[in-house]
Length: 164
Image 1 (cartoon, rainbow, N blue to C red):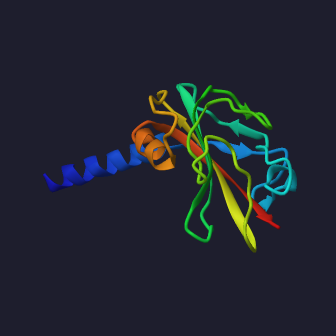
Image 2: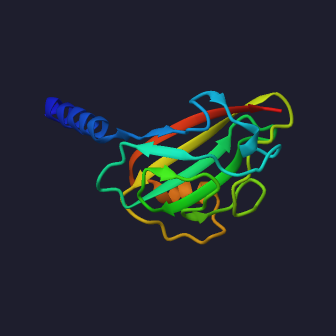
Image 3: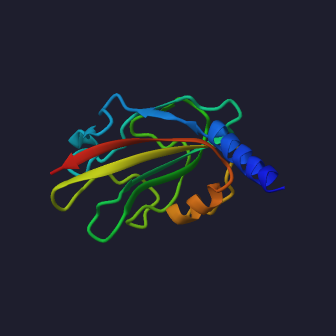
């Protein structure tokens, strides 16, 4: 009986690993762990860069995008929270393809990198979901992350660096 339980647990773990997929997130504006041009920051036009999303599972119903800075002085700062993005392979520069939630400033919009000092890392995280989310527009990152639990088909991340 013990062997059967171990076998089932192993099989479940193996299936979870096999079905977990990774999205490839790139930008024509900066490379992974590369410098983000000032155009996309508080020192420039403060608009979002273009993102390309590859390897989206065919059963995806919507995308979620979260951009944050885990090295902010007062803890992680959320720069952009967006959900119900239509399934497509690009998020265009200076666009709002989904529903924007509250960022770290309490605003429903993109706010570009603006580190007070030093170089900071900005994580552009995309999630492919098997559903669309029914959330209030004033929802922030924590509410969105809770809502996507159990609905993530694939995810990926692009990291950019900015220093004033």
